[in-house]
Image 1 (tube, rainbow, N blue to C red):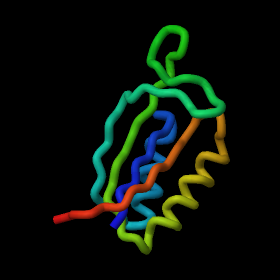
Image 2: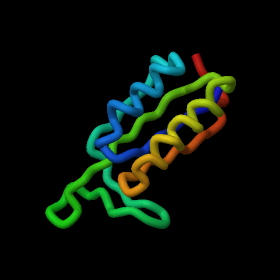
Image 3: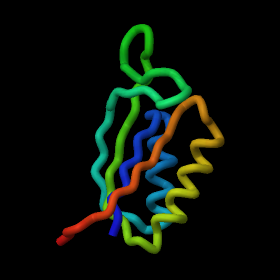
Image 4: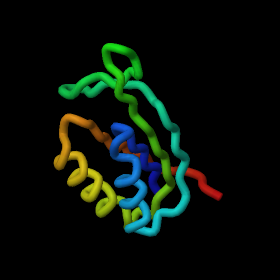
Length: 97
């Protein structure tokens, strides 16, 4: 099992959930209105007058067999609108019940 953390521009919300549905990944936790900025490019997402956009973030525990395909689909979504921003982080899960 892997923990998959996805941080993305709020405009991607429905698309990210659609991708999770595509791979039958039902369980996740969503945080709306998260703040951040990209490592290299893109505009900050601060929810302020100067930088009004915001991110959302999702974490889900995913079967190892689905991680690669999920990551590839999310990468395609990011590449379709690179200025919006979307990042995926994957960690090993040691204990899950």
